[in-house]
Length: 195
Image: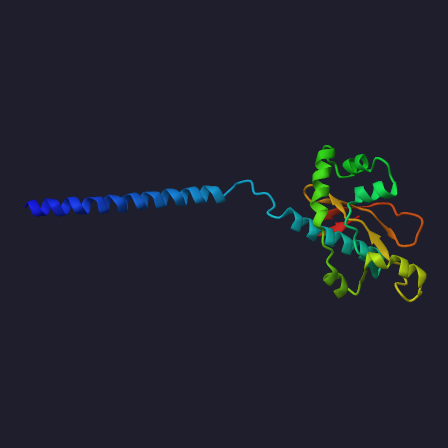
């Protein structure tokens, strides 16, 4: 009988350990579930959202302008470009009003998302639109062939969106034109960008 109790005592710690491991496993699964499930999920990749929406708006602009040529998009934001060119002083206040933003901080946050914008050159080429490098501006101005981009070359700055990607402001114009075009204000309705 002593042997029986000795065996039971040896088995008992093993059973307790297995029970504890099961409890810890259940607890860790619960913690992992709580960690990865969140009721308020923000966009996983706001820069990817920006790239997608910005390329959609630019394609719509090219379609409306019936333009077959576009220069690469400058790396600087619309605001930085305006500061360099000194086109519209106080552009920030105008953008805040047009996009119905709260303040400059919110605008700066939305502009910063555009920092790594990548123009969809493959999609544009598939649509028979020429994407011209920015460093070819001078060369193209010297060799003005009327058959090369007969409708002009569109120059577009990176669009700025509201936080829900429902409204966009696009600054654009045509190369070698002295006059700047008014901003295009787009609204996303029924799956399309409309002015």
